[in-house]
Length: 107
Length: 124
Image (cartoon, rainbow over all chains, first blue to last red; front, side, top):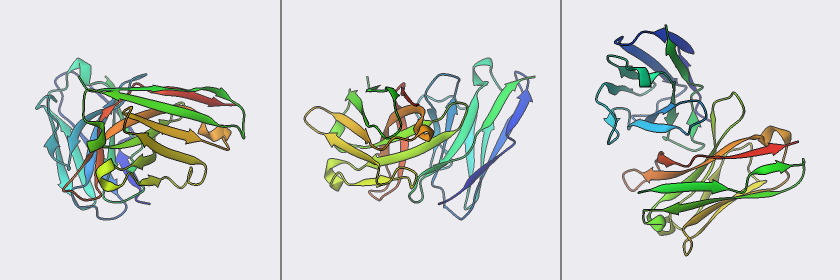
């Protein structure tokens, strides 16, 4: 199975900050990555698919990049509603796998 | 509005069975694959399995941790996806989410664009 690692595991940031989250795959997966946001007690919400495509309705302060094994989710100008856990998912091959997540909290 | 509503969770003993349902509305169910994803308390997301769309034969894929114990099926007439869980283990305790899957490029690539609110399964 393809292992996804995310760094950092958590970070503290302030409203207005730019944050960059990393997801690394154990083998090359092209651009077959999605990013999700999850808040406590809620289901995940799709943000980005195919590594860099913004899901409809998601604010443009979210962006994704990368291919192969290294992927990045960037949030420009962090907003109060963005404090959450972010995880990546690979869909290059079965079994589908998720990264462990990066928790973004308020500094 | 696209909606997915899971039901059927609850408390069960090890070795017993449960069947979860995912009732959908607001989209053409037959055109989409459906996945089940679980989240153990305080843990990350774990994909459980997927049933392909009717167009692609409704075939299934499973995570190794549940293969042979769990079965995913779909009822096109009711727009419901099911997760039959047999031989439950304590480590199956989790919130179980169903999700609609987007299939890319007419190939076997799937990500999850809509999620239900989840149903809790406790095995103890």
